[in-house]
Length: 212
Image (tube, rainbow, N blue to C red; front, top):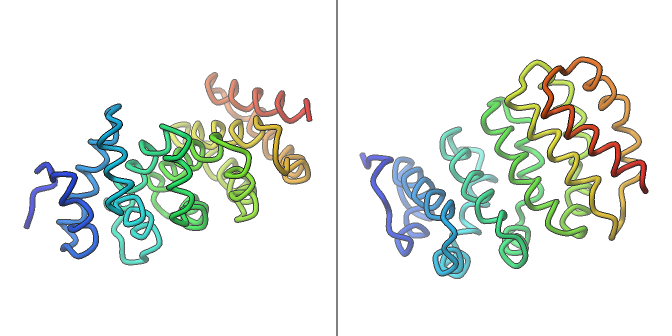
């Protein structure tokens, strides 16, 4: 068995993700996540060119992926998408939207929470990305998350942050009807939530939505 803390060279990451054991896939995803947490353009470009991003997305679609592997792959994709532009576009091109929306309702709060951070980075990067998530059902998942995580502030914040990302962009097909349908859930969250950071995000979302 391979130790998760062992660093895997970037060139070996896609090989292990594609054909390694469960332990090797986890070690590769962890190394990828750590590498992408650093602002290192050559490393980011390498992971795009050598197929790693597509393999991370493939792991999200694999029903056999463990909670630990899903968490590491999501975190790695969150880091990749944080660079925006062509890096976010590469994640979307790999077909990330459907599994990310589905994982928002994963039984593991850790997985659900990390998927929302990833979607927030991608949806906030451009209106076309935001629109694709809307088409794939992200608004229904946000509504469910607002209700389900009302007592879990650690998970509620990324839901509120995601809502701001969705409401902020003006261009593209602005999901006005979908945003309006969320207002009751947002108002209930504001009524019940005492966390200042979550409340600020919800008020920001309302402010963006009211400007449309």
